[in-house]
Length: 121
Length: 108
Image 1: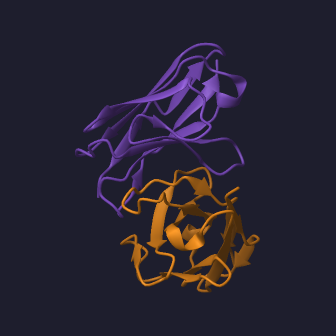
Image 2: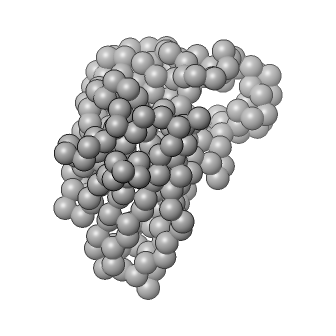
């Protein structure tokens, strides 16, 4: 069965960076794009970015594009999301989510369990 | 950016009753719309894609309709596990994907 297992919760100071991982299993990793999304406490969902399995295509939300980097490691079927220059507004649960086989269909059929990132001094 | 607006923000429904949730797009998204359910403390779960196609394993009591700018998610007979927050999401403007603010379905 498809599983996306994310790294553990993180606590970071303002100005620092965080790297969250998402290890995929149960399907052919090289056939599906991966997305990253986040959800601030008590708030809705925000799309952050997308990457193709080989890592040579990425696209990011405009408000984050100078701070977020998504990469892949096909040898371990893992996707990473790196967010820099953190502020308290980046406190959120971060999710990886798989896109469907048709890469132009931008919905999310499987989700990771979420990683809480807390930014606090 | 395509803005998605959901209404109502909160819907109070008794178990066994029908729930109707609305989602409006600021411009046409054709049928490129998905619905998700999020229970407390859990990741979202895909319910509906292409406005009306149920995802794998989703019960038939969930149905979606609409196209263009107006969409509806209907839960025909609410079960205890259906009390949750529901989000709509457009994917017509790929990859600039946007969500509605959510509708919380609570027990009346």
